[in-house]
Length: 518
Image (cartoon, rainbow, N blue to C red):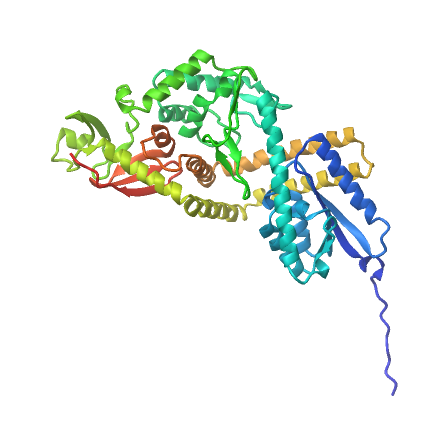
C-alpha cells in the first residue's frame, strides 16, 4: 500500500525574514546645534549604508543626544535598544566606535556579554572589531580602556572650554534657582516665585530661623516646586546664601571628578569665578549682606539672641516628653528638661552639658559621612523598588506611563522622518513641541498621583539628606549649626548619655556620649 503524502506549502517566504536584522547606534556628547547636525549625519549614514544590502536590513537607528555618555542608565535610546535586543527584535548592532557605545571597560564588557548570550553581535567600525569573530575578550578590554582614555580626554577638553567661558564671563546658565525662569541660557525673573524669595529674606531678617521659616512656608502651603515636596532647612539656607539673588554668579561651586564621574563640592581644589551683574537681581545687596552677617553670628552660640540657639525647641525628654530649655551655670551652658526644672520629683532626667549634644551630633554626622554609600544608596534603591511595586497595580498610573511611552515613540518616528527628508525642520519642531507639551501634562498627572503619598515625600527628603551629607565636610571637628538645622528635626534624650537623633524624612539614629559632666 502506497502512503498518501500531503504537501503543506510554506506560508512565510524566506525573502525578508532571512535577512539579518541590524540596528545602528549613534550618540553625541552635547546638545549644541553642531552636534545635533553631526547626529543627523550619523543617522543618515547608517540608513544609506544598509539600504541596498541583500543580507541585512535596518531595523532602527537608535540615537542619543545632549546627555552624558558615561552613564548608560541615562541614555534612553541606548536602553531602548537593549530592550529590543532582549525582545528578539535585533540580530546585529553597528556602532561607529567603542567610545560611542560605552565609555568604561566594565560597562562595555557587561553589555557585550549579555548581547553575546542573546546571540547578538556588535560591529565597531572605527576599531574594525566584530564581536561575532572574537573569542578572546582581551581585545575588547584593551579597546574599552582606550575608549575610557578617549572619554577622559574629551571630558577634559569640554571642561577646559567651560572654564574658559567662566573666566571671560560668557558661560550660559543651564538651570534656574527658585525665583527665575531659564530662557535661552539667561535668567529671567519669575514674579510669583520672586515674592517667595523676598518673603524668606524678610522672615530671616526678622529673627526667624531656618526651621521656623520652613514651618511658616509649609503651613501657609507655599508651593516649592511641581513635585509638591515640603520646604526643608537646606532649601531655605540655599536661598539665603545664593548670590544669584543679587544678580551675581559664582561659577564652579561644584565639579566632576575623573572616572568614575561624580559631582562634588569645590572646596578649593579648583578656581572659582565670581561675576557681577550677570542678570536682574531680586534681593538688594544691602539685604543680602545683612543676612550673611546674621548667618555668621548664629554660628557662634555666645553671639545668638535669646531662644535663637541651634538646639532651641529641638530636644525632648524621652521619659516625660517635655522640651528642654537652656540654662547657663558656672560659665557653662546646659540643657534641662522643663518638667525636671520645675519639679525634679516628676522627672529624673538631669541637666546635660550643651557641648555633649554638639559632640554627639558631630560623631553621628562623621559616621554617616564615612558610611554614606552603605547607608543611603541601598536605602533609596529599596524605597524606589517599593514605590514601583505599589504603583505597579495602579491602572491609572500604568495607563499614563504607556501613553507617555507612545508619545516618546512618536518623537522617535518624527526624528527619523526628518532625517530622511520627509519632514521639514519647522514642522518637526512644531510637532515635537506639541508632543512634549502633552508629555509634560501627563507627567504632572503622574506627580498628582504620587504627591499624595508619604513614600514619595520620604524619598525626596532622604535624597536631600544624602545630598547634604555627600557635599558636606569630610570630617566635622567643630559643631556646624547650619548642617545641624538642615538635618535634624528633633533629639530624644533616652538617658544622660544616649540620644536619638530624628532626621528629616523619618530617619532615626541613636548616638551615645560619655562626655557628660554636670
